Length: 308
Image (cartoon, rainbow, N blue to C red; front, side, top):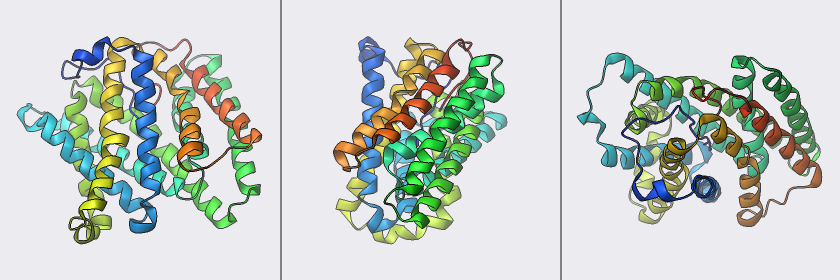
């Protein structure tokens, strides 16, 4: 997505971009999407001391909403009341997920936080799935969670920071689960990226009373605003749009298998950019959770939503 967080939806509507990107191999697009997503998160971490993690996340939402509004101009579309309600709830869930995920990566290594957040999509797949793979994935993911959480608690980080980080990341996972359900309704209604634009605006407005006071500090600082814009474009606009392009080319199940690569991508970015070098037991936990993601994807119907 988070980050963090990323949407997966049924085959996108006609408003989904394609063009030249449609000729680029889907795995390559997905790799670029994942790298930009977590590079944006890595840049955001550098701003936490200046603004605080939740405020940085709110600005990511605000600026992404501005970019999407300027591009999509969703007011030209005829909206029903139901479509607007679903888009707004979808955006609020997305915004809440981003805010608590940024709190998590302020206290936990990026790769660990991303892996633990994936328990949300895995849980949705297990609840809605009908086969042994979905049920087994919960067991595999639980083993990965126990391993990662246990190592983090026993690691060199202050225990209070770890507790806050774990509470935040599991809150993000719960928000992601809700976002998946709402995202399916938005995409199924044909709103596509227009729905994402409306949702981003709704999320920005809902959290404005908590973080809007930072406007007087951020707007006059052109350099800070530029960094926040980089976070918004890298972590929201580029990944979400590329996801829509990829989903035109592959089914939801294949897309979900590709999602299993994201914890590894986040770990690589964290190691290179933030110098967060994982231990072997942490890598084992990441592999277990990635395996659980892949298990929930296998055999899923193409019209179902797996992960966000």
